[in-house]
Length: 199
Image (cartoon, rainbow, N blue to C red; front, side, top):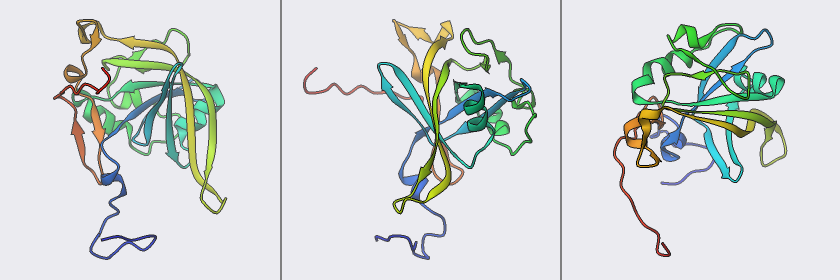
C-alpha cells in the first residue's frame, strides 16, 4: 500500500503518528502574563543538539505553552513517566488561560533556579530553558500554517538523586512515557545496549 494526500478508506484513522513512534512527551511548564503556572504535554517534541543542549516542541495552534514561551522568553520541560501518566493526561485537557494545570493534576510546583517557570517536582528530571525562537511553520507551497515550532536552550538541569546510579541517569527506573498513534502510549522500562562499530 502507498498513498499521497488521499488516505485509503481501509485506513480509518491516520497512521502518521503511529508510524513516527515512539515519541517522547515534552511536558512543558510556563507562566502566563499574570504569573499563573501552565502545564501541557506535547508529543511533537525532540532534542536538537548537545552542545549546547537544545530542545524543541511543535504546537498545533498557538496554545498557551508556545504563547507563554514566546511572551516570557522561557519554559521548562519535565519528564513524563509511567507514575505520572494520569497527571500528564489531566494536564492535556483544553483548560482556559489562567487555569493552573499543576493544581488541577495534583502536582507540586518545582522551583526553578534560573527561569521563572516551574517544573513538575515529582518528575525524575526536568530542564529549565530560555526560548530561542517561536516560529510559524510553512508547507511546501510556502503557505503559513497554524503550527508553531518552539526552540529552547537548556540553562539548568534537575535530576532527583534516586535516579542517579553509577554516574548515569537511570532511564529504566524513571520509566518515561512515549506517545504512539491514536490514544496509545508506551513505557520505556527495559533497556539494552548496542555498541557502535568504532567504539
